[in-house]
Image (tube, rainbow, N blue to C red):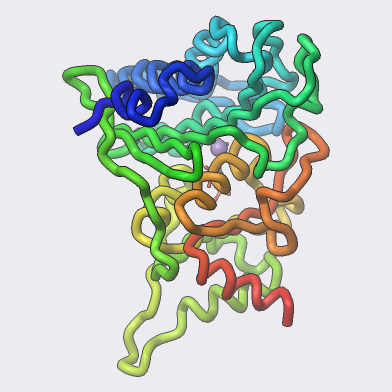
Length: 320
Ligand code: AHG
Ligand code: MN
Ligand code: MN
């Protein structure tokens, strides 16, 4: 089995600045993984504050943010960092060519009940030569991402990376403290039978999505179900399952969240790039996610992502 380093050596990417950033992500994730496995009940509590998006901040949100920021701010390739947990962009190295946006801990409302959580990263190359980081470095279409990655702290800890039109998955070997390539060149089935949506919102969402969900609930000629419903509430875990098995994840605009719940730059865009490179598709209902131009750094969006034919079928309801 190829180690993480060996894989990038073989891909001739091990000298690249992006590899240095991916190294930081892998090392940061090992620290988070250790903290999660230590099971210190103090870490599982709420911080007692709200973030810029008025959501409860958990202690682990703060810890994960600090762990990754520590790595990124020491990395000379990184010019600026945008995080879910910080209102403003953080200045990195003046000579850095890359901007990184992150959700340091995704699914944090699941921490206290021992359900998988994740970390999500979006990497852009700067197109200006300004040494000072600015919003324009982040308000870019997702299709322009250089690379995207997530870590899923689940039954095992895995690191999924989208680069050069491919998605590869690495599993953390705890004894050796090393990632190994365990899921080479991931491809999502074009059809799947999983649909993932928070049904609590169903009465407040676009009728086109209600229609699609109704289709998923139709029985076959033998009176048996055609689909199965799965929704964990950690985007990384929900997406990962669907990417591997085939399925669709839907988080629409709701009465509670009129612009959608998920953040475009550091949740949807990186997941959308991973989806694209694994052969699946994403949209907000009107526009492809990767073609959206963000207007502000913490912008939210409706998010539909998954098996190509399932997403196409859902979108066909919008056109009728
Ligand atoms: P975060 O913990 O980073 O704020 O993200 C939570 C997100 C996402 O992981 C999940 O899919 C969604 O919020 C769940 O929202 P609901 O509880 O409204 O279903
Ligand atoms: Mn999140
Ligand atoms: Mn988060």
